[in-house]
Image (cartoon, rainbow, N blue to C red; front, side, top):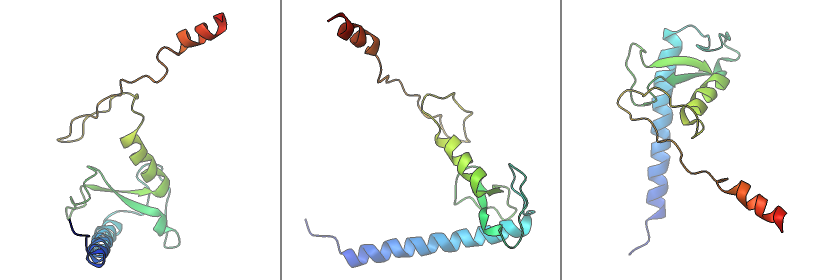
Length: 127
């Protein structure tokens, strides 16, 4: 098997990154024109000095779903946007959240790393 052409791979990655930035700039600019510069969660207001801290969140988490009317976007501050995505990946043992459109809920964890620990500790104290 031949070695991949590293220069070609580097160019593919660089092009993908440039296209992503262009795509983001497109919907970000549209969202900033459509909506007031206020975080949709905490209500923090933004102005031209700190608007870089206001992000566009895709409600359905599909970054390719960018309707012109902005119906899949909401403006969130950096902190609320990060919190939203943390809730999405959330703890494996947390309560099951409602399904997103067309997506099955993530399976709940069943492994317990501490199973049998109490018996093992009792065994050590008896010796």
